[in-house]
Length: 173
Image 1 (cartoon, rainbow, N blue to C red):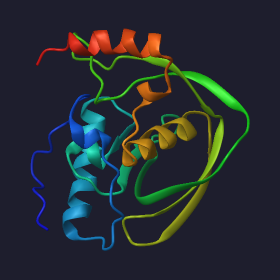
Image 2 (image 1 turned 120 degrees about the vertical axis):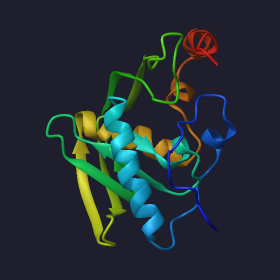
Image 3 (image 1 turned 45 degrees about the horizontal axis):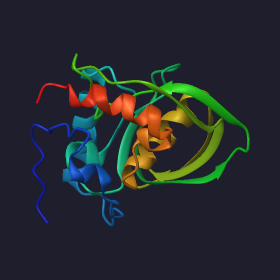
């Protein structure tokens, strides 16, 4: 399978690719490494803190994210959340694929586990593991959800989801 690697295009809420369950990455190819680099640049350009492959129209299990506190960037291939804390935390969440009429992400409060343990393969093929809490935990949960076709709006009550979707529908096509 050949993947187009130049000029990644951000997919927006309503695009069916955002609802697909992504395939495991079998081999870390030069294409994937190049795409990870492009995704980091795109994430930074859009002032985001994470970006998953389906958001750029690739149905493979990889993502990029950063820890906003340290600016450390993670390139995660086949990430798996192996443990979630029982304690939940509610924070405002947005998504580069869920934009409102002003071309900026629409935000809503989402409850998620406060801390998680995650395992992934890095861009060098090395197995990695980390315990994350606070913002990094939230970001990795949000981004790994994308790999399963789940958006943060899926966690909202029907009323709140409709409020977000009203803003999304006003987004310039």
